[in-house]
Image (cartoon, rainbow, N blue to C red; front, side, top):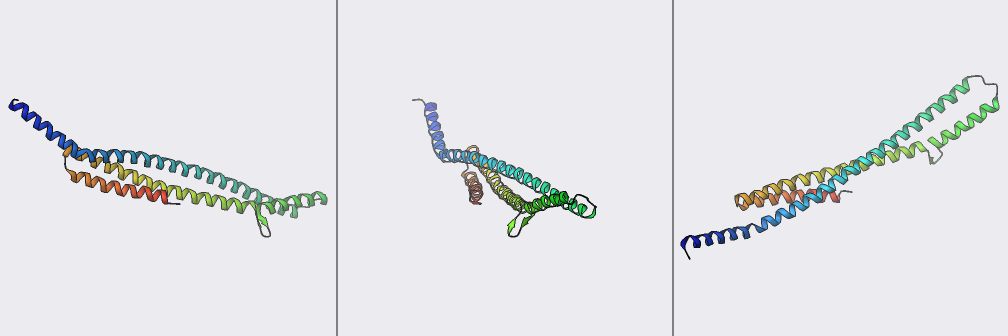
Length: 187
């Protein structure tokens, strides 16, 4: 065996030792990449949920406003009928009864809530769901960003062969995981 062959074998052995020393770093990067993908999907789904809830809330508020406008217009019509002289008292009473029935349905009667109150509660509930979904999405987004930062810093370990980068990357990643878990736990 020649001297340069022995030196080459020694260098190969040193590279193999370095490769074995970097296996935990490579494994960490793989796990982080999977976590980034999972948290990204969770974040996207949560943003979609918030948008759909906001659309429902907007539709419910629109329905509330339409019924509220009809109620107001019906009240104005009742006032106008009381002021104007109408010869056909029977038709007037029939129209007044229909208006009273509509007003009772929209505004409620006695202990019973009307459509307007129910729609208002429903719209406010949907708005609360939007706020919750947005709060969850923010936590997922933060978790995703921190995990990506952790992944990049960890990858610097492979280039520099300095484990300090690996440890710093793990710290960012743990904080990102905590943020994402808090997003999952948020109800």
